[in-house]
Length: 449
Image (cartoon, rainbow, N blue to C red; front, top):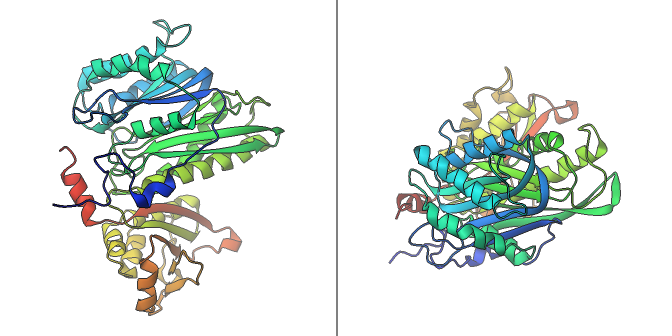
């Protein structure tokens, strides 16, 4: 009998190697509540939560970034319309089911997504009455092309609402409820302050899911972030876009972009303090960096749980003419199957890295010149980098040391394009990805079973 060490355990237990990523406590934003409820979206799921709800006690500003896939699931189009109709304000909740993506499901799929939002609306006091636009965003994840067992979900929504809580265990239940092939729930929280209100402590909480079909913009990936900072919609949307471009849109598992990707943020202002009214303010710049770092940490949990992954890899590109060039080169390396399989085999085949750099599309003229390029491995243990290529010249690296570096779970690949020196304003960007293993093929070959 085959034993799978890197796929989601059927008993719901978190693998020992992944337990360190599951928080035992958290600092959660004021006025937000969460729950995870079992409704049995998939008939095979007899006990695990598969319906999540995150709600605010007061109306929120909201922003979201959605998949760029031209085939968009019903929850994506419904949530987009809700944000438009409400001008990204007055949102009270997000409801998410796992087990079925409600994608490519025709008119019925749209009706089901709307029904989920309306069922949550009825739980508010006072309830949202039609034809007023819904106050609830909706997300789904799971198998494409199948209809939701909508009656099961609708009957479970009152329970999901009645069990909402600010407790850490409730947030963790919600994070578990959105998992599919994930091997652990992905939940983070942290506290922060802003310059205009230094005596006020705010909080960020976020959960995400995804282990495969991960590649911008974005993939089978859901992300929900909540904060009690007072941020109006006009500021929240560019803040989220900036953060996602450097986090959820800078990770790759397998190069596939899903139909359902959504990352949403809610801000209810319950923490008090001065509203963030200007995008040129100190508060805006500080929170932009806080949110970006938080989104990076959250999105990297997805890479650490990549289907069948044995490596967590950062490719850091420097010396580029602009940020977009650096990011395109990093993305090209991160999605290369040959790079990913070489890393799985612990093979320091730097030629594959250079090949992926060389075929990058859309970069500035003169950005990619071999005689200026350098490539190295940066070990996670603090020892000096291992030079593989320097200004276009191979460095004949010590294969024994290369093997020792590649034996680590974490690795950084440094690519210096040498087009513009960092001191002269050269741009840089990072991408996070994992390797390709035999287990990845097994998981996805058996996905529907």
